[in-house]
Length: 239
Image 1 (tube, rainbow, N blue to C red):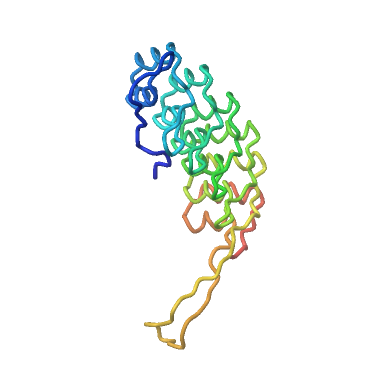
Image 2 (image 1 turned 45 degrees about the vertical axis):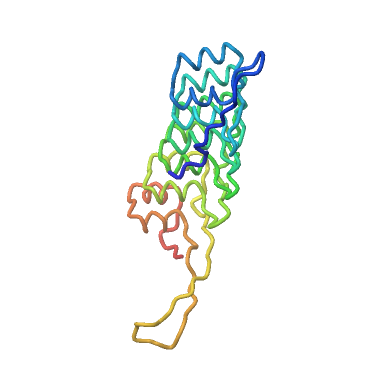
């Protein structure tokens, strides 16, 4: 994974009167120092402090899959819907980790199941890619949009699940109405005939335009293909 939160610790010169030093809570969470975390929270540490890139204490706790600390931060007032400078939420990190536990905890605390990255990637797409069916089911239970498409290629969560051969996730998505007829964007690709028998020049061909079943065929996912056909996918479809 390309980590979407920064690694720079914000350090203050020292504590102000009645305040905890800036950065100490993030540091304790990064070290997973439970004793220090508990003491800092008791002493009034700012649970929503952020690093220079917008990454908060909660981002770090979720990234480290530290469920007890996540619960403690939420109970102390950590904002569940906070984003860093790249638009990453704690929920997205939980989905990227494939952590069904933290997905459920964050959703229960009010996280938006449809908070997308600037690319249009939703938590449901991310969870479908990483493949934890329980995380996917938790998102669906909180009305995650099963029909959303990311902006670059127009792909859905179902397409992402099929492309990664996660048949249990495919079944969960189909059970919540995911369309087997959606098609990814078609886009032109320029290729050269150089080196082939026909040397007449340059060609433009269409790429993309795949349905979930075509993704299954492309990636050799027989289990998902059977589910898709049972849900009404057209076996005669072409890109």
